[in-house]
Length: 57
Image (tube, rainbow, N blue to C red; front, side, top):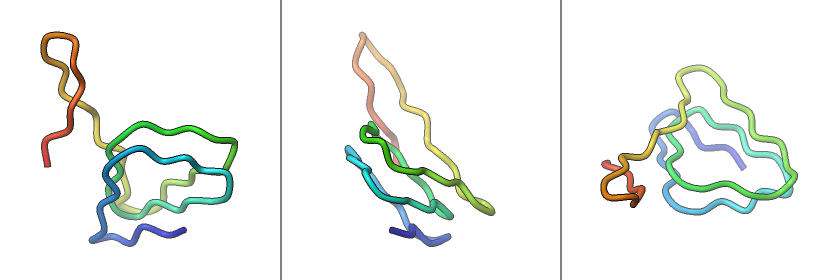
């Protein structure tokens, strides 16, 4: 799967294949697949308040 530059992937990802991130990913990851960040792609960090993690888009 490819997340292009303008794309956003939000939520839990169970990856057992290959993900190429050129856009933004925010969420939990699991699985044994490859996760490759290319170009301007980045992994959004969660905001943690009162022990709860969430993502501000």
